[in-house]
Image 1: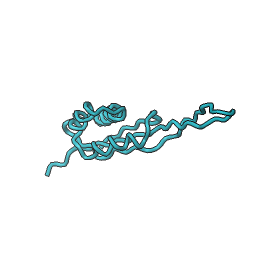
Image 2: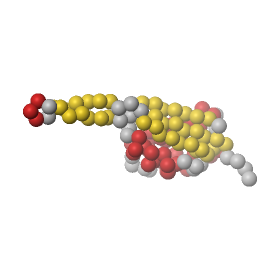
Image 3: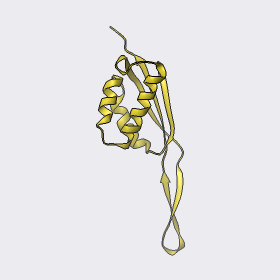
Image 4: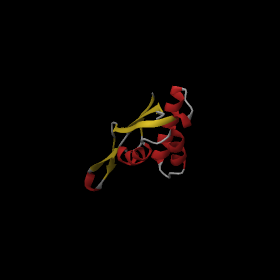
Length: 108
């Protein structure tokens, strides 16, 4: 089993979880192929993390399965936008932490 972590990525965790659920349990090679044609920012980021996890273990992508792909909430960048009558409204810019684990296939 090998892991890869990407922290403080400027991406909404809600949007990233939609993509992460799709690849969980898939063969790593299939997951990378599927993410290549998914038109989300999250797909590109998660595919890089999966590729990193595969490389960390010294495996080939066709030998391993994505056992876990988890997206946690990181800190928010807090920005302010000026509004009418001297007020300001807060803009929350979310960040995410992405954790991927891959393990070799079990031959049964």
